[in-house]
Image (cartoon, rainbow, N blue to C red; front, side, top):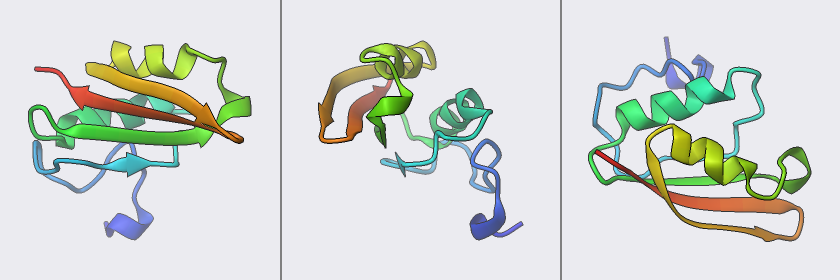
Amino acid sequence: MSPEGCDMAHTPLRMARLTSPSSLSLIGRNWPEYLEEARRVLKPYGFLFVAEPAGRWEEEYLGRAIAEHGFDVNRSDQRGKFRYVRAVKVD
């Protein structure tokens, strides 16, 4: 399966290959699986950057959800209509 046609929850990437994926795609119903997949493919202490429409998330829920999936949230803020979260994979 090519990366252009894959489900973000099941990428064709090998484990611990990336240092910094980013996302504007947590809109799927299985968005918790997207976070699990990001954790799987990130190298130890790799960065995760998430940008999501602010109206879809309560103020702190997105950061909490990311933290619950094994990331240390460094920053979460809203600019305009988007919420941005910066996190690091915790081992």
